[in-house]
Image (cartoon, rainbow, N blue to C red; front, side):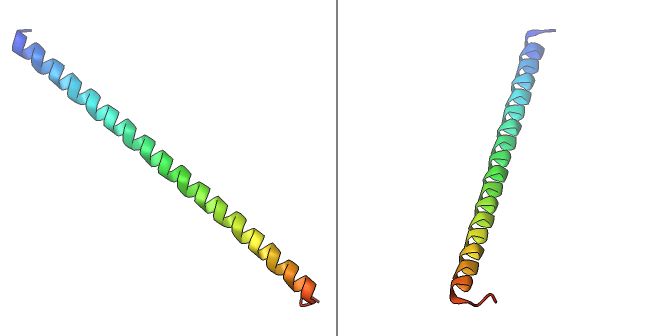
Length: 66
């Protein structure tokens, strides 16, 4: 392999490694976004359950759940 072929080969390897790193970073960002979405959904469900519990308690106190 002559010098220009060797340099071309090294450039190709560097390009491939950069693409792999970028792909891994995108996967990490996607995973973080999915995790945040799931956390927000869970928090929303907990708040909804607490609000429903509070509404039921208020109804019980007012005698509306008879």
